Length: 219
Image 1 (cartoon, rainbow, N blue to C red):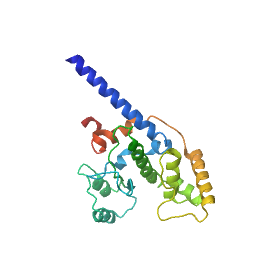
Image 2 (cartoon, rainbow, N blue to C red):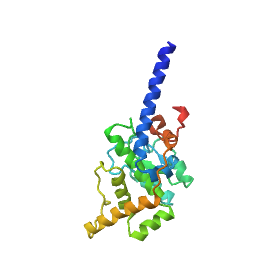
Image 3 (cartoon, rainbow, N blue to C red):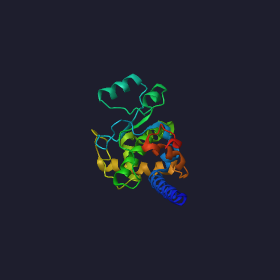
Image 4 (cartoon, one colour):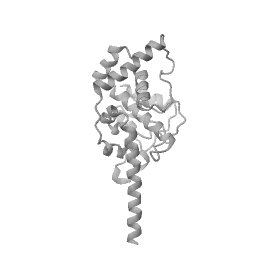
């Protein structure tokens, strides 16, 4: 019996290792964000009934108006998961990141790369609160949402999504495309420094089906 238990345990460990290795390969595509993101900022999944059918994969609670944010989510009838620390984070002025989608399942399913992209996208928005990133965009006349989408396209080129945020359009599309693409390369040169080894920090994000508020040892 012990031999069977050891075999099962070994197979489970192999599956876990493959799962996290696959996730790490996705996250390391964007080394700047992966290096700096704090998974404790992320409420994943944010809602009790998360799905892949929302207009947006997630959002970042950047506003300091806590009451206003709560009213928005109440109006949208978002059923916040009871396991989520979203409200607690708001009250502590931590400005959480909300991911609306189902958790990443195996790290190899077709939709998983989209889900990882959305986690990175929203995490990047929070990173862009840093003064040096704000200055970088201001100096080049870039809008944040569009620039983040261009970075999405750089790191996840197989994901087909609009480069321009909804409701916006370029007055001179050809010139704007050149400007944003150049900015992406300049951004990578100025801030990019690949530093792997953050795997342990993302493991907790995906423990217990992705609920970041539960520690890894409770799996």
